[in-house]
Length: 316
Image 1 (cartoon, rainbow, N blue to C red):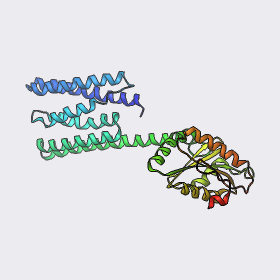
Image 2 (cartoon, rainbow, N blue to C red; image 1 turned 120 degrees about the vertical axis):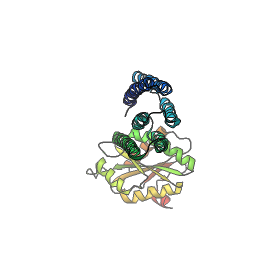
Image 3 (cartoon, rainbow, N blue to C red; image 1 turned 60 degrees about the vertical axis):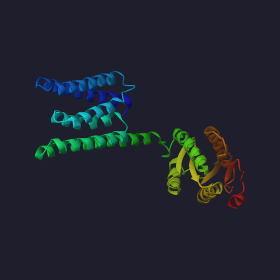
Image 4 (cartoon, rainbow, N blue to C red; image 1 turned 180 degrees about the vertical axis):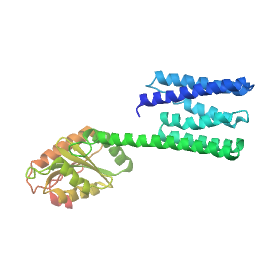
């Protein structure tokens, strides 16, 4: 869900909860329970104010108020016999909905579970018999539905995000995704003192049937689970993290053995302090050089450590 939609959905929850809480508070006030009535009216004003704020300021919805409301309601629930059972049930059903609608999934789940503990304890103390079972059943049903709904929506959003990051022609990740992933991989390699190779693939002219999609399909079968394949212009790049520089050479050579007859191959091993754009420029130059060589030409590797244009050197 986008921020505006989440803010308005949350606003609806707050406004409805505020209206019902106000009505409940006025009823308690008329029933000679002024303390309960005043407390409920205070909560209702907080809810209505938050709802109106989130409705008008959708670009920056309130994230602090749910925590405050949770604390107030939990306090009222534990406070004593004068808190109506209707209030407890009312908040138990609506709280997971607006927590999941506004907060991140893990945060909302943690808060909901925390409130569930308070709710179960207070219900056990204040209610008995079939009434306790009914309230607990309704509470866990509403909580489960809210969790399932938000989790399913979250999975759909992640799936859509993945589709946006894919290149339709090749089925590999697109260049924008490479620009997003490359800084993380470089930072990880630097942090863990490991190596990273950018392995470039481009179909040979004598194999016109080897389209980008077919090339990507062949490469996906050979890639390790943690390697990722990207489409850049008219060639493919695989990010291949490894333990050391020599491990990267071995990986590059293995791909060379498997695909040399059908594809031009070039590899770039990042040096120190190289930017993402510098690496992509170096990769483009390397695959251009490799594509100009004969069929039996060795893998071309570009690195600050060593320049290898000789199969025997790479093997050694």
